[in-house]
Image (cartoon, rainbow, N blue to C red; front, side):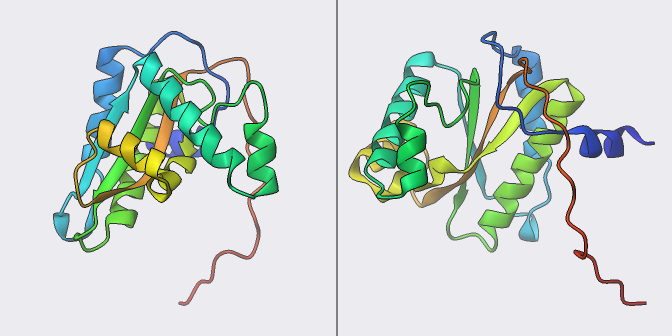
Amino acid sequence: MSVVLNNIFSRRSFRSYKEEPITEAELEAIIEAGKFAPSAMNQQPWHFTVIQNQAILHKINDTLKNMFLKSNNPKMVERASSEDFSPFYHAPTLIIVSGDTKAVAPEADCSLALGNMFLAAESLDIGSCWINSLRSLGNTKEGAALIKELDIPEDYIIFGSGAFGYKGTDHPEAPTRREGTVTYIE
């Protein structure tokens, strides 16, 4: 089996990470893979915000915790009530992918960039996990202030983010794939 297919079939969403940050070379390889994602009309409308500063990671965590607690969503409130709450599972690296709202297909483009980064991480034996919760930061004053503090460009919105770090003790199994999701027309 090809290396690419092996990475696709073996990649999992990790929710347990070692505290040790990934190396600069590994981080740059992951980011470069994101830059090489396909994009509509080759607009490359993404912006990557890489956070490894623990104080900033704690601030993001606290902001999301407050948002979840005020959300009136029982599942979110329950999750945020956990003493060990961390929407990015205490990963030492968080990469936020925002996109230019004026682009043709920024959500798809940013998602493809994140996908490339996840596959690159797997090829380096680095764990990763899609983190969707940061998309809601723009919905509150506190979150909007944090977006500004993170230097996310104006007219860009967060389309997704990823947690990255050396794999912890949790090594998830592949979930069963749903049947009936393909139609062949020959």
